[in-house]
Image (cartoon, rainbow, N blue to C red; front, side, top):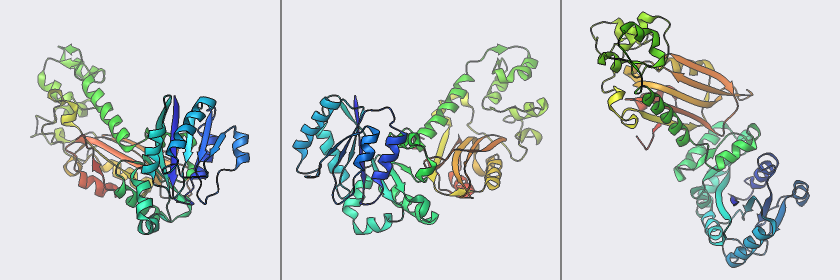
Amino acid sequence: MTKIDIFSGFLGAGKTTLIKKLITDAYKGEQLVLIENEFGEIGIDGGFLADAGIRINEMNSGCICCSLVGDFRKALAQVISEYHPDRILIEPSGVGKLSDVIRAVEGAATEGAVLNGFTTVVDAGKCKMYMKNFGEFFNDQVENAGCIIVSHADSTPAKKVEEAVELLRAHNATAVIVSTPWNQLTGGQLREAMERRDTLEAELSRLAAEEDDEDEHEHHHHHHEDEDDHDEHEHHHHHHENEDDHDEHEHHHHHHEDEDDHDEHEHHHHHDGDEDEDECGCGCCHHDHEGHHHHHHDADEVFVSCGAETTVRFDRAALESMLTALCDEGKYGTVLRAKGIVAPADSASEGWIHFDYVPGEPDVRTGAPAVIGRLCVIGSGLKVDALSALFGVTLHKSEED
């Protein structure tokens, strides 16, 4: 099956540069055909394409999305039958409407071809101006994109990049937005974003699934009559005949070295009079998990997830403090997991900050850059406004919650 990818973008946005990066880095080993529809633009250098083994089919005599729909159908069928490509890359005119191009390609798509994705490239420094001056054409390209890749982010002030992302998100609430400078990303990362496999929704779904699996796992344990076995085997998830122990054991996914502390942590639901038993392993907050007994509910009735994509840069030490603060249930709700990849405060840093949190166990490390900063939180009774204030980023609840 031949995949068809459309690359839209206003004049000078950087479509050609992006396609060249993908050809050399992401599409290696694939049989490719590039269809260009130029309008006052400089196309990809023919020598480069020849060296890369790319077939090119230029359509300078007209616009894909208007007068050449019939001819385009014939041309597309001919390309597929003659070259049997793995992928066809279509670069329409920068002044064309993406919605029209998509309709033309859908109408021309023949058996053996599938429309794989439509990406719009937007210059971070010119986004606001183009929206104001060329709204009809520019906004159409933004609103109909499955992925929006921001160009020139490395040479545009961070505040202006953040403003551009906010404008783009206002016009397209569902597209994947890539705001990281391209030289920090691999072609594979860009391709995953374009094919919508690297999204905030996907990350929230993965986290929810992990919690769901863990919750389900805790419902299928073996029962032990010996009370002492509970302490020794708690992390093998065995149940006991004492129903209270079963309830209290449900959602403790992390380890405590002190068995007494563990007992107190597990029984806090029923011993409100004992101050020590209200404290979690991190020693900074009180648990009040009303309605948080997982074993009588489906995971989607118990868990709440929220997250955000962001261009905000974080100081590592400050982020570690934020994660430590998450154990304050009175302020933030019951946070069972937090995860993210964010840009570092030091723009010269080679890596980004990766973090993963379970109660009492924040893990902050350095890793590869992502297509855009992203953080997710999952738990019960989450106080989204307070969490947003903590991270300095507006978090949004998952639509599934």
